Length: 477
Image 1 (tube, rainbow, N blue to C red):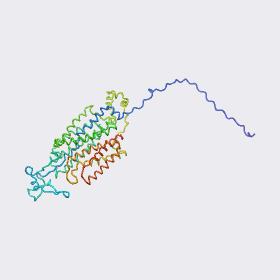
Image 2 (tube, rainbow, N blue to C red):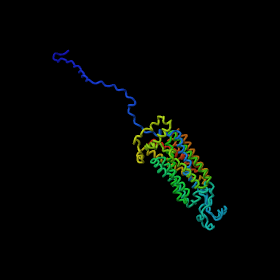
Image 3 (tube, helix red, strand yellow):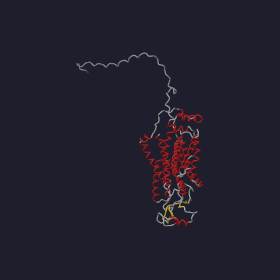
Image 4 (cartoon, rainbow, N blue to C red):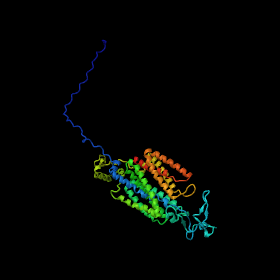
């Protein structure tokens, strides 16, 4: 109901009619888009795995074998220090042919033993003056050596690096280690800039040249300088082959290839001892290691040992990558495989970062891992070299050189086999921590007892650190 004064209710107005549609021309029906009319997806650069497989499985295995073989002779150059610097028992040279023991006791002063209970021995660096026991002087006519182990003629016996001149032996050992360090830094940087193949050929050439110069060195000073250069060149060959070998492998083969290369080095160290027993001269021993390296200069022949495909991919060398495309086209099985079509695509320019040392240092994660793994390698190298120069036991007697040498080499071979059996099952970090702990315990035992030479833990830690550093580098790139 409504009151008489209220205004009448107004019904709501209906919705306005829609405007008349404008006349339009009939639209032609367009066909459904076909796959050929769609824009092509952006071309992706070929991956490292594709370029490695483009070589073919057989060619890949052959190249890996070629990268392992030089380790057999590199062991002659990198592991010969214990043989060429071994100091045999000696005494002052007396007039006349080989004096009897009674004459030696009367002509040489008697030195007491260092440890309690030792009877002592005739002096190695002193003799009585004028056949009288009133005055003692240094050796005047040189030294006679009683060589029972190792080389009959090494740098110690040839240049009389004993007594007052013995300091040249540790200087040579330190210079050799510094040469290895400089070779890894300099030639390792060249391998990233110039390429693996060019750096390998340069290092091989330098190794042959300095190997010959070492063999003809007339003086200890020249020998030390040439050994420094030889160590740098040999380290460059070893490092370049190590990187190339892993770049030729897919991840599932890296551990096996590294283990085989390590066992080849162990075989070279055993062969080194056999050659030393045969030639008995340090010049012939080092020449036997440098001469076969000339055969590996044939890797520079085109097609024998091509450039690393991963390095070509990283540096975007499109002109060199065409060689892999031609190799794929020449192989019917690879030409029909659709997984290799990425090789036909053009690489995207500037799609990858160009790493440098400042950029590596600015990355917190990379810097942290470099410090950890670098410190681990530093400790393992130091312990290994300390063990290699170990010459006595807790009783003060010198153990058999052959026994300690074979024990050290066998420990290195056992370390490689142990890594092969445990790393893939237990992980890199766990095994690295285990070997670090065992190395520390073994060092404490040696410091306390000094009875044996345990190089297994240090060797295993060193090889695992090498493998871990390379995998970290691959993940970073």
